Length: 249
Image (cartoon, rainbow, N blue to C red; front, side, top):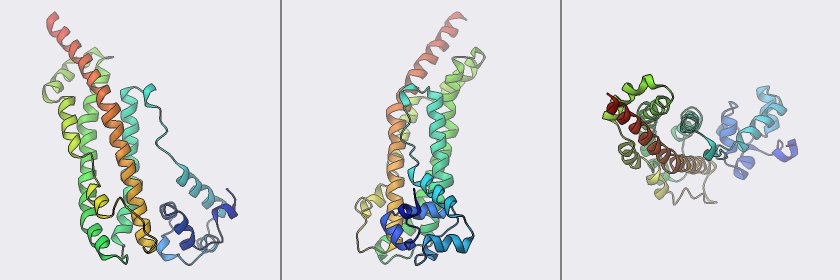
C-alpha cells in the first residue's frame, strides 16, 4: 500500500468519510480522530514523531484483519472454544473500549441518536461483558472438562458431578436470551444506516456499532450452529462412559 493509496495527503475528515473504520485504526495508534480532522496523516505523523511506514502498516493490518476465515469443520471442540475465547478477548480489549470511548465523547448533531446511545450503550456493555465471563466460567469450562475426560479417565468422577448440575440443552436455552445484543440500537438507527447528512462523529459511531453487531451475530452463529451441536455429541459420549462406569461398579 503506497502513501498515495492510503492518502497521507488527505485530511483525516476526508479519509474517515471514505472509510469510517479508519478512526478505530488510528485510535490504536494513539490518534484520536476528533482532534485532528483538519490535519493530513503526514502532518499528524510529523507532529507525533511516528514513522509513516509504521502507521501505514498498522492501519493496513487493522483494516484487513478478518476473523471469519477459520475452517471449523477441521477443529476439535476444544479448539473451537479457544477461537471463541480469542474473539471474546478482541471484543473486550479492542472493539468495546474504542466504542465506549467515542460514545462517551459523542456529541453528534442528531439528539435522538446521541441520547439513546448514551443511555443504552453503557447498559449493553455491562450486560455483554458479564455474559461473556459467565459463559467462559460455566459453559466453556464444562465442555472442556468433558473433552478432557474422554482422554483422562481420572476425571470421570469430576465430570459426573458436573453433569448433575449442568446440561448443554440448558446452556443452549439460556444462550438464546442473549443472542441479539444490539437489537434495540439496530432498530433505532434503521440497521445502523449512515446518512450523508450525518456529521463525522455520528458516521463513525454507527459504522463501529454496525461492525460490532455483525461480529456478534457471526459469533452467535458459530456457537449455535457449530459449538452446541458438537457439545451435545460430546455430552452424549461422556454420558455413555459415565453409565458404563456405573454399570461396572
